[in-house]
Amino acid sequence: MSDSETLAAFLDSTPAGTRLRVEDDLGDGFVRLRVSEAERRQAKQDIRCVEDAVIEMLRNARDAHARTIIMGTSRSGNARRIIVADDGDGVPERLRDRIFEPRVTSKLNSMTMDEWGVHGRGMALYSVRENAERAECIASVEGKGSIFLVEFDCSKTPEKSDQSTPPSLVKQSDGTWTVSSGPHNILKTASEFALANRDVCTLYLGSIIDSAATMYAFGRQFLCPNNLASTAAPIKRLGLMRDAASLVNAARDIGIAMSTRSAHRILAGEIAPLAPFLETLDRVREGDEESPKKGVKSNNSTNRDFRGLKIAPDDMDAFISSLKKAYCELAESYYLEPNVEPSIRITADGVHVVFPLSKL
Image (tube, rainbow, N blue to C red; front, side, top):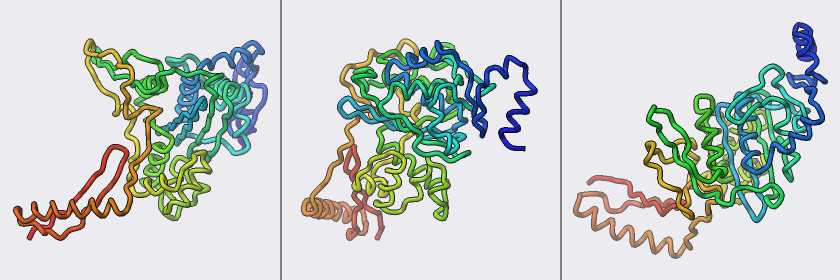
């Protein structure tokens, strides 16, 4: 029996009120619901700011049974770019555009009521696209997840001006955790979602390049070199790449503009994968919260400066020579092999030098 026949049989077995909710069977478990014109018009008003769109995208991934969600954001001028990758149910290729139409959903009998209201009417992605400059499912494999790309003009769809102040996790007197007060920016929106759904899925949040590094590490952990990129889970696809050129191309295919230098840094481990977002937040007890300080930037700032340090070859040679000379003096005192080559790694937060220990 085909998916369409299965759904038709299911609808025949349900009460008439349920059947009246379905206008069209799109196949593969997706339907178009009957929704009034008033509800359709209201849907556009559901997204009043970028943060509203963020929560809808995250809920969409969760309701697709994602266990892992990686979100990357960037801001350039008035342009806010958001990429959400998940390992959920995925979307059939022929429906990747139609899911942004009003009333299209895969959740016929499983609407979700959570802290943000009802979800599953088939209006969330429609609302996002109506308010965005660009919104698309840029990659998807059925049963393996999807990657969504959304771009906003913040002069039309605003966001909180303070996107750098993170919230804290506050432990209440009864042992429960809440998110502290502060600007309701993307960081706070994401933290509220991550906390409320911590038993269901894990959220990773950072810059677009950070998210790419995380997808690369995620793929390296789970995929074999003989996996095909075209059939691999989109969220893991970057892990199949073994050189900078292929990584740049694969990233471009999932909506990530990456320089060759960034690709080399990811391959060399100089851009570390993100930690689960909740683990990056400060934890305080109720009553110990401090008022957020204006201008204090978190490592998770969605506007973080990711410009790296680049040292000229001659300067690096002189630096290494000085390090080796200093190490020789130390090695003599502690009976260590003095003639060893240090490894130097430059990251966004420092210059890391390691001398291998070899005892005489």
